[in-house]
Image (cartoon, rainbow, N blue to C red; front, top):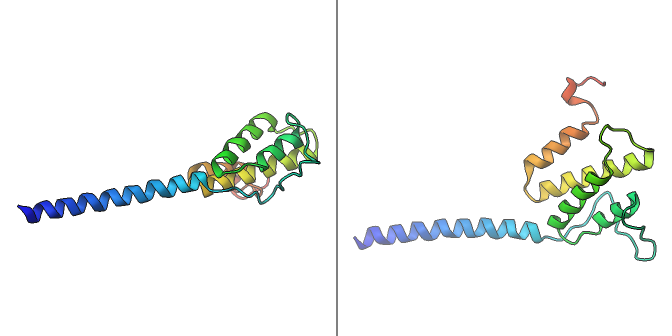
Length: 135
């Protein structure tokens, strides 16, 4: 009986270690520091005003953690991505596309693979979803 009890205890300990390691790993990913790749962190002296395209972009790029970056890039896209794809100019499109790529990268770093893949399918520069043909 003590032998089966020790096996059960060992199994329970092994399972709990596995789940603790997995949860601490995901906790680590949420708290990991964020460094943008396509955007640069703004200087305090040249920072644009929040509520503007550039100001909101800089605000999202200045996130401290991956979780904060995901939230800020989502907010940026909600505010500045045109509903029907009608951009004001190239500056607008450049910033929205950059935000999508940053958000996709952050999703992958956080382990949110499906969310990252969803954005990848949206940006699809070669129209792969259309059988490889350009529209």
